[in-house]
Length: 194
Image (cartoon, rainbow, N blue to C red; front, side):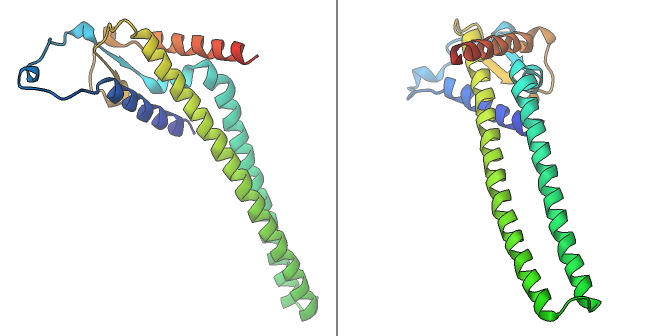
């Protein structure tokens, strides 16, 4: 589950960086670099760490993970129960403990139960997928807003996700600043919702 959150966050982070870097039509004069990028103009964020350590993940994300795990366990148990019923029916028929007509009737009843289970399971899975997507979008939005607020004064010319970083000086790491801002924005969103 965390990997899904982190992959979605990395994608959102890359998109927001690309949107900020959009350029207009250039002329030959514009082809020359306007300024050079210095070490203090760059920063990186360990987005996965921000998500894993954020207040929103520790509260809502962990609860959602638990809900997903419980649903998977419940669905697996129901499926196993239906499979056991089918096996028991086949064993009874093969041993001659029930008639062909009775076996066919029970098999039809069991097929209806299976179809009902599958429909119910699909609804439950779709609902959970939607909850996960909404949560991922909220986390991505918090990260994007946090970075925009931190870089409102254009201190940094480039902020990159550390997941694509091979090497970087620790002084360029603004993860803790971003995490604090994400938590601040989350707290403000919660307060506004009340």
